[in-house]
Amino acid sequence: MKKIIKGKNFNLIRFKAGDEKLYNLVYSIFNEEIVKGFINPEYIKFKSKSNVRKWVDLNARCKCEVWYTVKAKDKYIGYICYKSREDFPEACDLSIVLAKGFRGFETGYQITKTLINYLVNQKLFKYIIAYSNKSNKLAEKLLKKLGFKKTNKLHKTISNRLYDEDVSVSITLNYNLFSISIK
Image 1 (cartoon, one colour):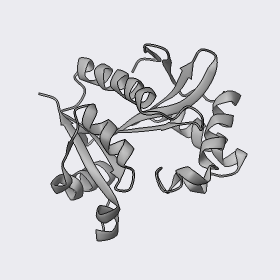
Image 2 (cartoon, helix red, strand yellow):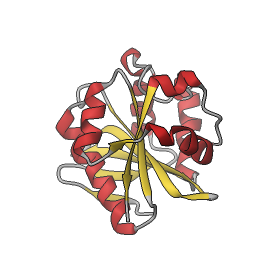
Image 3 (cartoon, one colour):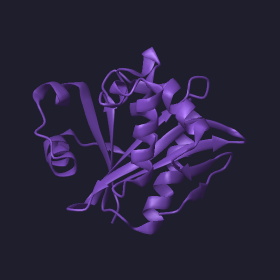
Image 4 (tube, helix red, strand yellow):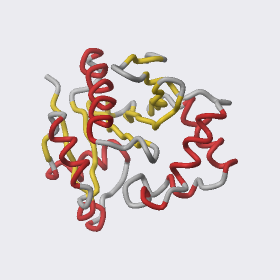
C-alpha cells in the first residue's frame, strides 16, 4: 500500500503512530455532535484523547484497514480509508470524514475519486462498497456521482462476509449500501 497518494489539491498520507496533528484531527471529529449519526457508532466510544491515540495507533498498523489522513497544504482536513478482510478479498469498504469547515461536495468527491482511482489501478478488489445513512442525501448524491449504484440486496451478504456481522433490520433500515463493480 502506498504511503502517499497524490491528489489535485491534497495528499492522502497513511496514518502514522505518534502524529500529534492526526490525534487532534480525529479527536475533534469524534467529539463533534453533527457527525454522530454519520460515522461508525463504534468510533464515538473513543472520545478521550488517550483513546483516540490508541485507536489511531492501532489503525496505523492494521493490515486490513488502510487509513489515510487528508492533507491540504499544511493542514489535516479529514481522513479516508478502505477496509477489507483476508478471507474475503473480493470487496473493500470506503469511508471518508472531513473536518468541520472542509466539508463540501466537491472536496469529498475529489478525495474519494483519488482513492477509488488508486484502488482500481491496483486491481485489489472486485467491488468497492460504501454505506450511507439514509438521511444523508448529500452523501448519496456524492456516491452516485462517483459511479456507485445502490445495492441494498447485497447488504446482508457484504455485512456478513466483510464485517462478520449478522445484519439486523434496524441497521438495514438506517443505511443504504452502494457499490462499484470493477471487472
